Image (cartoon, rainbow, N blue to C red; front, side):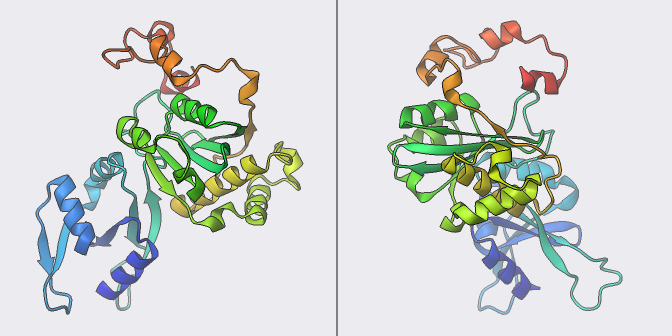
Length: 302
């Protein structure tokens, strides 16, 4: 069992691995130390053939969502390794496999998400002061993309959508944008992707296959290389984390920020469009005055 755990952990080195053992999800080694500290769980140990007992902690499977929510809210990624066969009929060790990866931008636990607010994940392909941006909310199936021509416009778009997570190429980490502000003040998790996610041919092939079209012209991004790269990388990331067909993501909306009057983040803040300046609350903002919606879907649309 421990050998399979280590093999699985090696495949998901940037994730906390929740490994299903009976009625519990167990964590070992550094994952166990981290989770026990953040969730205030008892740290125990397990004999695994090493000179010292392996640090271990666990959470009950029937209450896993609340623990996941707390870890994801702190910016962690969690890989869920489930038993994929009935233990009663298994011959030898029960087969297990990672069935999903939960990240800040792919959390589908409706009880933990703020009602009426989208949970966006951003993908940014940055290239010398300009960028292609793709955004998705997998709880609603919304998927959209654009291209922006300056660091200020990129920053304003991030603040406007307030994503929970940004995935990006390495160049974005070297940009002039204040990433510490995004992480610490805006509470956005920033995760760089390997270069292969931004391969031209792979991105185009995936977009054509997923949206069932014969060319990028049909999607409106044939002349938007950066938008296509960001969209393809985001779609691949969603496939990798959700482990399903993403059947609710049925269309790609291409928009041009230049078609709208753009307000920078300082102007939006001073006008108290979505939250008040002092209390940082929705109550008292313009959105609070206008919001007469009755459902979460209506509030998200507004």
